[in-house]
Image 1 (tube, rainbow, N blue to C red):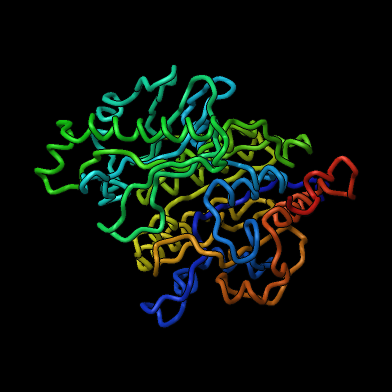
Image 2 (cartoon, rainbow, N blue to C red):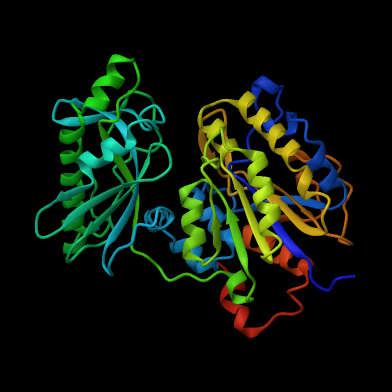
Length: 428
């Protein structure tokens, strides 16, 4: 019997959900036929996890950061912009501000801009040409804005220059009703801070300039002619400066790998010194090659102690109000898992957050989760879903604790050490 096992965490983005009227009050996961996941939960334990604070919705970078082993303090202060930038290899200098954004369909509404489509029809084709038109924009006072493409409609934006601050608000209207939302003006979050005021003003100038450059771009003229939403501007969120981060896996000296096609998750992996394994077949969307991802994870386990396998598709179907699609992709994921189930591994299956198909938004419900370990404990739950997990032996725990449970079952947590305190202490 080995004293140490290798570990695999399957992160199904947005796996948790609320009851769907289409499924008679069941969630897409409860409605899905998932024999492989049911096999794992029957031989292990399940429960519910809270990504950050019970009842509070979180973004992908926050929920995934906790699962990757960031300390509670670092998880709280993690900003999406630097993570997205790291995921596409965008570097910078101390003091630079990074933001995450989308190409979006914007139109003039008097002296303001309306947001008609936050994702410009999930644009893929022509993105490089659009980026070329706006990739570097000189702003006032020695500040330059740089744009780079991420996954599909997503972009990263860097503001470089003196005297900048990340304490600014988003321009993305967020909670959104189609055709009824105005682009927000960024404002300082610290009203009497000159750097915050200056940075917000410069970001607003940047967004306006990008709209002027893109509105009549040939790519957009063609999209309008074809009846497809044009990408006439950007919306931004998650401003932040780069942080020096350490995960609990690094702290233990374990080698880890991340299998993903999603730039935010890849960025977290880069920041935490994981081996980030990507492939053109890993699209970060609903058409990702699940079989190729599973085989990549199996190969990575040969040379790494711990592997994270991230799949974005369930979250996308939730955002698109498509419970049928979410159920179908969960069934496809379950079928693809077969090659991983014949190995002696500690396996965790969870998500970064729950996403509600009814509203299309992240929600605060805890995430259904299972833990299988050779010779590990079992509970009485036989099917993997929200209701079953509510009765499971893991109970309701934070994401950090779920990772610690996997590492303990792998044989790497023998007892509490004082040096571990920053990872175990309560949230700050």
